[in-house]
Length: 264
Ligand SMILES: NC(=O)c1ccc[n+]([C@@H]2O[C@H](COP(=O)([O-])OP(=O)(O)OC[C@H]3O[C@@H](n4cnc5c(N)ncnc54)[C@H](OP(=O)(O)O)[C@@H]3O)[C@@H](O)[C@H]2O)c1
Image 1 (tube, rainbow, N blue to C red):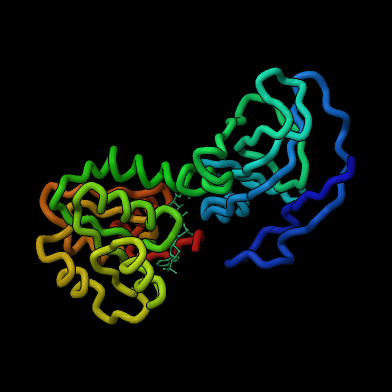
Image 2 (spheres, rainbow, N blue to C red):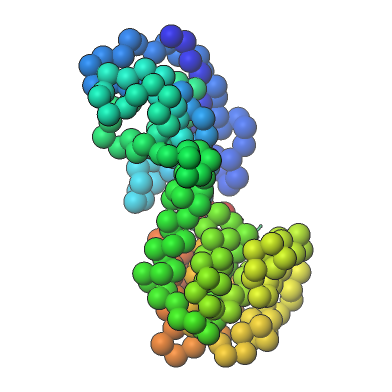
């Protein structure tokens, strides 16, 4: 059959643009024993994917120019030569950006769309939700009454961190980049306070005002200036949840002063 795929046409400089991608029509071979034919339903676009567009060593290998982008995908089984996977089953896995693809069972996870809509398995029940949950619960170890600060608060991870922190009885202060995000996080998602880092001139002071007992857990999604402002308001025995790019940035800041984060 003929299907469509999206390949990396060239490596972006700064923000990716449409010209960095190309749509191709390709022919899929017949499926063999142990193969499963899938039709993609949802594709996840995550920040780590920008890093993979560079030709640089990282925790995930770079995408190859001319080859399809790969990432988290929810797909439907169209045809299967594997006993455990039946036609119309829904699955998730790390798959190419293709309308249809041929996969094998290892790495595919069957999902139950009676529990939640299929797209949730790339969000709250997928990598961003699990990143928020395990980072906050296992590293942050929140206790009722503690103050949790979260940057990138309106992002896929941050928005979940804030809600789980509230469920654990914490005071939650977010940092986000627009008044609309501030409004939504407070009104719809239960954050106690949210700072708009683009319009607040003294972020350090704003954090001190909103966190009068200082910050017990900081969940850092972005690094940079917001991170430095938070560090000045951190409590004794606090826990800081950092992702790898934030950690590299932190180390660079301590050693060499502010740096440019190529992820953003
Ligand atoms: N998604 C995952 O499953 C996953 C897994 C492991 C680790 N991580 C890491 O977790 C972090 C957040 O991921 P995510 O999926 O939540 O990302 P996301 O949905 O893209 O949200 C990140 C947010 O960061 C803010 N931001 C961007 N540039 C900024 C800057 N220069 N200064 C301050 N804020 C900035 C943006 O919000 P504003 O418009 O409010 O600025 C953006 O919404 C990333 O570091 C990612 O690598 C994610």
